Image (cartoon, rainbow, N blue to C red; front, side):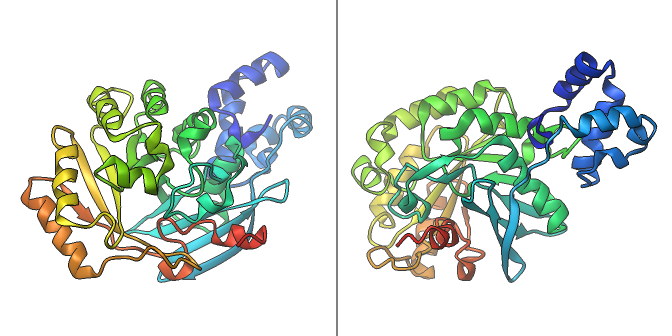
Length: 349
């Protein structure tokens, strides 16, 4: 059994079935690894007093987080390259806050969504991450990098809802109060708009916040930027968000993310249509100036004055809007830029 992908309740059942033990030793195992950051669970008092059990479990239990291969820092932001067991690599980002840190973690090696403004999409999808490869990013951030992680955002490489089963299980491990103990309300799961999977996420009753990467207020533009819109157009997304309003399996209020691209989706008519889309929804809108990747020549970010003007138009229409100025842009660790180092590893253009 893999420590990083097994919830506490399953450890209780496993120890009872195979070793005649139960909650006491399950708690000790989970606490030693996920609270104290010590993968040698046999060091805990409970297992020192039960050496035969510790020896038996040593041959049954695996601990295989990704290996932290490289870290780069800028203004407190840390981009981490994690090497996986099969030689592939993913990135995550530790973002400093006041008194704590947020971890932006990846869910796939690459991505098959093909969003025009996202570097990861150029890689295509190599494979889904396992549960342990996701929870291992949190373990590395807390215990290798010593970052005081309190918030998690599933907004790194990959489409989280395209790996929904593993994401749901990973969130279960991360929120267990006997282990990592991340509060569900401190977790945000983002999607490009896989409407069916949005409903499945809600039905998993995790209590996390849903974020939708919107980025356009009309179907023609959104389909150009995000091919997934041809399958799940804006009308379907709004209907789905309306149906999920008040769902007990999600935190109240959806987070709408809107990457501003000069001359593409930042005009007054875009703001007017965007306000129409948000109307009737309990939502917070994040405005994010486009972050170019290496070699990007077609898309550019609007100037700060244009970002502010777009923001003010939306506020005047009664929307709850935040301007999210990028952190980690110089590291290529900002929104849409993850995958740059992974592409270097794979020698992709």
